[in-house]
Image (cartoon, rainbow, N blue to C red; front, side, top):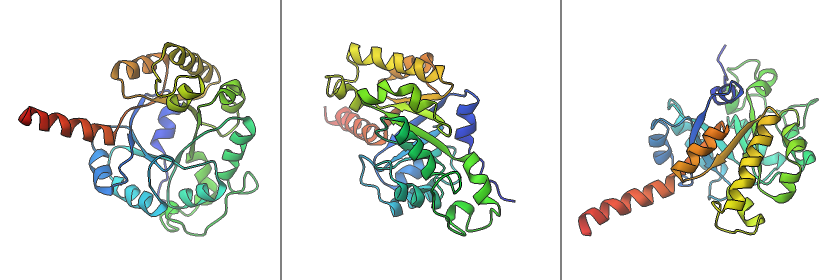
Length: 254
């Protein structure tokens, strides 16, 4: 029988550091290149990037055979969006703007078939290799990885309640929105923000769940890894392209 083994999920469950890159470019060609650059995971963004479902499918196809695992951030904690993403083969979801345990439980339920949830059933979706994974409906929940993004003061207040929901595999701290919520819009490296993030990482770890974060600051990324973050995005493809292309031009044009 064909396998639906999720290496990213099992890695974070075993406490193995996973280094990733954020992708905003919505390009199968760029993601195909990045999939073999040595990252453990790539984040395909639908919240702040203009990806639609067909573009996500094209990027999943482009990543097949690469070393990186795809994670998709849907635009919202939405049952229909989850159903469509899971059917096309997404196994790792990063859900934005989770503020309560109820919202966390809803997210879990959207990924599970009845009686454990409300995910709609399709007979032979791409996720089952079009029916070739014969017991997909019964096996898939164990290989799905649900990561929830906490990025507000209310979310921080409810952090343990969110992390302790059964079916939640990890909690990602959103430094951008969190810095805004703390009164430091556009400055995720403000000392007050950094202190709150370090505390949140410790609280997530204490719940036995995997902490995650994004930062383009190399020293800060290493700090978060040292603090115990298990899935860390260390940059974004559009920034890598912008900075590398600009630096190359400047070396020749001055």
